[in-house]
Image (cartoon, rainbow, N blue to C red; front, side):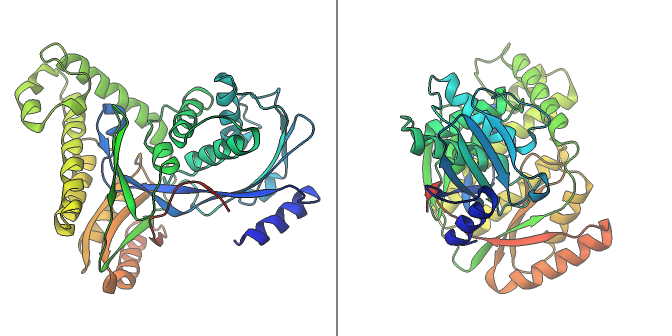
Length: 388
């Protein structure tokens, strides 16, 4: 949607668009490094050119009025800057309200209300981080409107804080960081333990990133996510009795093999094995891209999926079907699930000449085996949040 179209829509919803400004915040995809972010490991996400558009303007009073073009049936949802609490009725507006609350917790209080209209081009429930995109967008708007002294890295931390403490979702820092710090045609090699990061150029000569949205409702993702976190924490506590480490990300695979017998539960041992091996794979994959070795990068993507399926058990039948169908196709360099799991998306690296046939054939096999229809997106790597 063009800027003028968004301003016209805003006028339709709120009566006029005087003083309204237009913003954009990207979605993200993680290329490799899954379920490592809360285990002190590395992740390798990039921002996308799909994301969340926001039209915002300051009000004279303390009212907050929210409207989403993706949920038009919900109409305008009203609140106020004195009423920043998470409620069921507030629905999707709990994400922007959470960020406003988190700014307030840091001593940066809004002095007046806002009208905010959102339009997201990220498929809902896809695992491409629509919630983090909304959080970073809201933080960006607050900084612009109220002159709050915060960096983009702060916007990521505030977004994560609000999701953890306002919305009660125990997420790591990766999503908000990838979005707030996005850089065109680069992925971010981020050490989640220290927040040290490096931009790695992504040169996909002759290949495209294709995201496949499974359209499988992600019913289990939240409960299983918290379960996996506690399994890893238990494994870490037992390892810490025999070796001086802060996180599972501190271990190489060799070290893990040496000390893994300290983990008494077999399931917890498998979870820790994934966290350790996935972190090492992410480090190797980043190096492979720096050396322009797309083939090795693709192999590591495939290994990542196998580990998520067998050791971490977060893929589920539909996602395994999607990835295994992808591996069979000509021109596929690598494919894996991305995101928390139990539905969501896969990310595949596909040679240009085979993108169309990949979409058709994988889509057909997936439909035959699951009855579900997948959506395909050939995506570009975009930059961070911006004013349009």
